[in-house]
Amino acid sequence: MLLNAVVHQDYFKSNRQTQIKIFDDHIWFYNPMGPPKRITIKDLHSPHSSVPCNPLIVNMMCRANFIEFWGSGIERISKEFLEAGLPEPEFKEEMDGFSVYFRKNAKTTETVETGDAEVTDNVKPLINTRLSIQDIIMEKNLNERQIRAVEYVINNGEISNKIYRELNSVSSGTTKRELIELESMKILKQAGKGRTTTYRLNS
Image 1 (tube, helix red, strand yellow):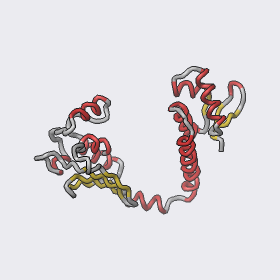
Image 2: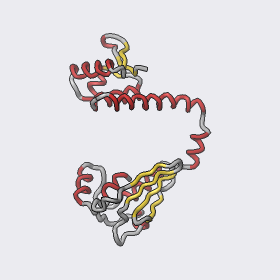
Image 3: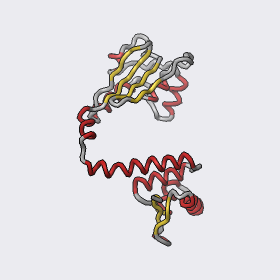
Image 4: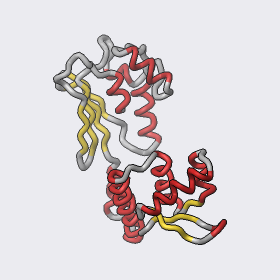
């Protein structure tokens, strides 16, 4: 939906911005650029002609395989929401623009609020770990390979020199240097020796 807003924004109206607001029960997208003329919201839910107002941006997004040329975005978004068991997005023309409402599934919300305490206890440390590591990443000047490695450790528990090389397509020298940097920053700690050496989160 965010890509849709970028593609269909009216960039000549600099005083009107695309807005995204997150509420307890829904997410709201607002684009000051409404649907193309002669196309209604009902039309958006079925195959319709593509009327790009920013053809250069559309062309770039298509070449990057982020979107398709023909107007299928709304239809595919709605389909994926329904397949995921979520309420279909609500589309409205309002405030001289176009709004989309993504609402929570009431059953899912109830399950989360009354779910198994053991599951909650298991999830909380992972969330806290991600938050603390995110703070460190923001503070330290990590490169993309190191960030990718830290994410791997969070999801898999540890990383070896071999996995680091394969994950980032780098040499043994680069791998050793960058893992030592992560260790010196106290983000990772070494476990084992020799060929069995791995790196884990420094909790």
